[in-house]
Amino acid sequence: MNPRSRYLAMLGVVIVAFAIAPTLLSNFSVSLLNDIGIGALVGLGLVLLTGIGGATSFGQAAFVGIAAYATAWITTAHGASPWLGLLFALVLTGVSALAIGLLTLRLGGHFLPLSTIAWGLSIPLLFGNVEAFGRHTGMSNIPPLTLGAWSLVDPRSIYYLIWTLVGLACLFSYNVLQSRAGRAIRSLRGGSTLLASVGADAFRVRLMLFVMAALLAGLAGWLYAHMNRFVSPSPFDLRASIEYLLMVVAGGLGQLSGALVGSALVLIMKNGLQDLLPLLSQSGGQLEAIVFAALFIVLLQQARGGLMGFITRWARRRFAPPVSNVVDLAPAEPLPRRSLPARGQPVLSVKGAVKRFGGLVAVNDVSFDVVAGEIVGLIGPNGAGKSTMFNLLTGTLAMTQGRVEFLGTDISGLTQQRIARLGMARTFQHVKLRPHMSLLDNVALGAHARAGAGLMAAGLRLDRREEAQLLAEARHQLARIGLAGRAHELAGSLPLGTQRILEIARALAADPVLLVLDEPAAGLRRPEKRALGDLLRKLREEGVTILIVEHDMDFVMKLVDRLVVMNFGSKLVEGSPAAVRADERVQAAYLGGVAAAPAPNAAPAGAATDGRMA
Ligand SMILES: Nc1ncnc2c1ncn2[C@@H]1O[C@H](COP(=O)(O)OP(=O)(O)OP(=O)(O)O)[C@@H](O)[C@H]1O
Image (cartoon, rainbow, N blue to C red; front, side, top):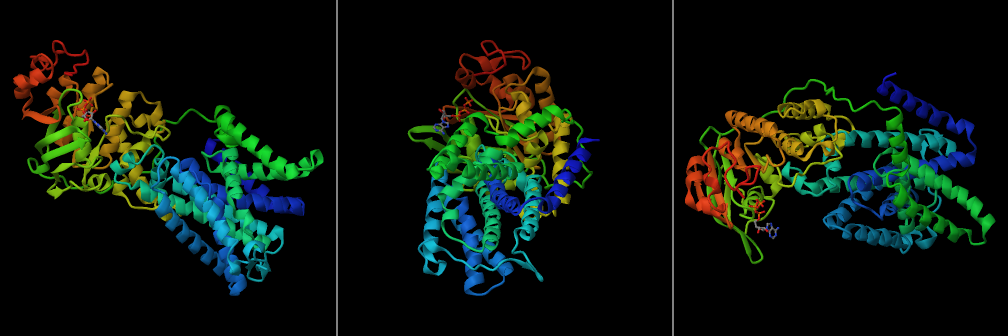
């Protein structure tokens, strides 16, 4: 049996087991399974938001509460149908999440989790102080769910609805993660610069994810209200939020199944402890909290991947074949390409660029132009201001003064994301890849701005044609750099030099007009450098314009059409490689005539062995 059939068979067994469970289990066990399903829905949102998106939330129970109170209020006070209650609950939860997200998601570091504690505390307090919500006594007599004439009042009948919704939510979330939106979500950890460089807005991605997680919690809240037919503030307070977080940490924050496993683990343990602890001590309630706190600490120390982390590692060792190097992608129409400007047309024009870091002038009144179809090298000794100049061009840093035009548009005040979308793609001096993602996904991320399917389309699998095009583009770019055979390996497994090349493939996937490369040859061996040089020359033939910062003079002199030399933040000279090599000011800047080395192949006297001038 191949792995896919084995996986489908296992899934079939799980579905059949869930379908027949209510006929075999006691009422108590079915009710427990219902609670586990509701917990799993909240946990699913937390896995996406915290485990995959990297934003810790201590306030998820508040969203469960907003939906539970919304449906309770509209169905009891206004006699609305619970299905209208669902719509109302989801809209209210979504709008609340959007408002809270807009206010808090820009907070960095520890401030975001702290802010989640603030609203996690305040929203249940609000429930307890509103007369219409029954204050701390809560609201009762909430109608049960009905499907036509079928009332879901009994735990065995609502069981099927809960677990069908859990199944659909898992499928939706899985589809999202396997998409353009999912790649952006998986890239959130590790900062927003990379996402901005491929034309994605990290804040928007995080906000959408936050709303999606809240909606999953809202769905759970709606089920909770109509299953228990009673709501009060305490099941939605900070303690409940921490319990949801504990569930996903116990189950495994890194994978969707962690939500199900964690919910089951914590709720079964909680029930067991509630039976056991009173036998051991009078104060069983307090002991339960202590046991859970101890469990949390042990998990954080010993098993950060949770139970599913253990199971996955074991299953991989036991069953999984080695990573398949076959790129088994369906054929797809190529993505539309942008038209490149005619050779010699102006592409980039930098006028009087200045960047100050406090008292330090890192870039001082630098001007130069780049025209279509040429390779221009930006060189200079260490600390000359080259990377800062690149960061100004790409919008990564704001200019203190000056102007940059790209394809005739003034991009001086534009964000990195807008500039990327205009057709400027870059690589980084300090490689920015997502090591836990495959090579294919890393490169497909580069083509993010060439497609448009969002979360909803991805979740419903309406994005398959576009997704196939994105993956085909990524495969094409991987083939170009000779890594097609390793498409499914993790980017983190590559040596640093190869990671730099992978960054170039990611930049090419954006179909750029201007490729901005920051030290692409650093860490490459001689044959790899030769291959890189060939690739860049081929790109130039195809009409791509290239601006390159490089310390390897042997490499750069043979490659570029023109050089701009910087020193102490200012432009020193500009000209052909031969003219620059012969220029005395450049020789002086590079400490004693290193740049005057006669043959481009030979390491210049006094230069570092890798051919670095500086
Ligand atoms: N974010 C920053 N804050 C303060 N100073 C900075 C910052 N970034 C760069 N600098 C300073 O600006 C100057 C230029 O740095 P930059 O990295 O642009 O030089 P470079 O030519 O790229 O050097 P290298 O070749 O070593 O990478 C250096 O003195 C550096 O310390």
